[in-house]
Image (cartoon, rainbow over all chains, first blue to last red; front, side, top):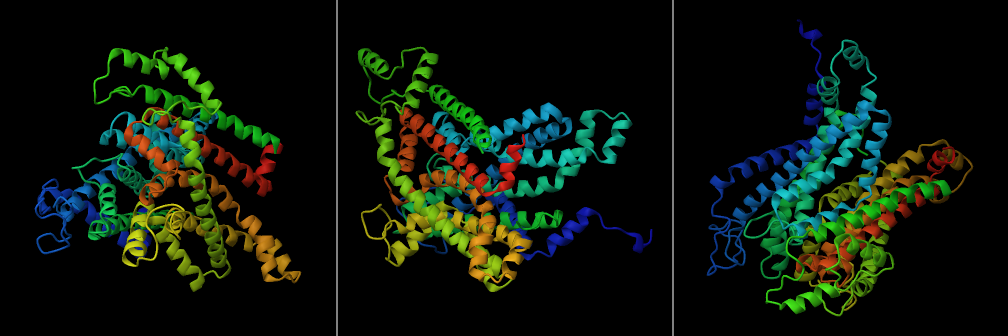
Length: 287
Length: 310
């Protein structure tokens, strides 16, 4: 085939547009670096996350402890690295849970239509009205502060918008010719959903998933900050910011470094999400 | 309009009932009773306690009793603060939380609408770019980061503002309000910019200008009404967020409001307190969502119409 006839696919187009958005590229690079660091943490962390040195106590940044130590003499850089594992894990696992529930729910409702659709979306509308933050706090209080429970609870909350987005997409897709053709050929309904409809909703789903990750990380940090999430001696960014806020008068570095890292991560994910939205669907626009 | 109100009430009431039911049974399913004291309690005392807190009745009866008294505003006594009822604690904490929330929402809407509209009027100039970049930062920096950082910078390093208290020192309300309000100011700015851009391009604005109205009148009287609809529909979720944010902000700044009581109750496993305040907070959030919905409908004829011909 000659070069003139080569047509770039929608994904190549999207990647090209994404690459020309400098903030999104910065966000993407930062997140990838963070993921690599978090994965390698057990091998590259200079100390153990629970290793205390009470004689040393809190010290400002130095060559032994690049970001200083906390009131128990624990190395802040190590604790930040371990915290990134928790934050990223919460972000990705809870988003995956939300993705699975939301996409399934939205596809089924959108494809079947009729009264099933009405009822399924009415359930979503009703759930939207529930103040879930209160229920999640209650869940943490009642059933103990387990990480797995937190992942599940957060994921179970965040699927609602995903279901709406997917349903709207599927609803318009199912009248398109390729779906009608598949139907006419006698393709099973579940196959139509998994092979023809879901792959075509991927664009908006990817965008929304990217924007869900920072929301979920924020929720985890929020709970840990209140003392209802991750418990010491484990480490998470919310917990570190809380410890930093308590001791900021004597040791500013304990607050500033976790705060900067956490904010930069949220920035990067939001920039990346915005960039992906512009790249995958130019019509959606920045607002 | 009546149809709309009824329609929304039909959604709100079942939601509230569902929340009460879920929270009630969740708290009652809690492993370990509320009376797992550290010290050993004699069986007689235990029996008295159970009787006092209505714990020896069958669960369904407890539930209906609770429902009936909750509707009357009676959430029972606090487990951890003997002699105090949950309703009393709410009465102490609520005015402070409300004050904080109202100042924050005023701060957010005033700042947000002003800069958002300015950005829309001066699109693609520095007056657009700079506030919108700052608002991106405002959205991304969460209150758990902003609050401690602001107190570190302005309270401890500069020494300008007190870092705790509410009404006890001069200026101690400023940092909490800014911490709680910033993210919403940022959202308001972006929403009002988007809304105003859409409205300013429409024919009736051109007509108003062609009539020779002053730019001030065109913007404030004609454009703002339509341009602010996105902001108004955001107010419901914003107030829900503000109430949840008050947990953090009141904890950071040591404000004796309802949010701090709630977090303390969660920490102390004060079951009646957490059940009562959870239900109360949920009812507030659902109520404000309803109000924001209705306000939005009052401002937007399209929403009203969609209900009049049903």
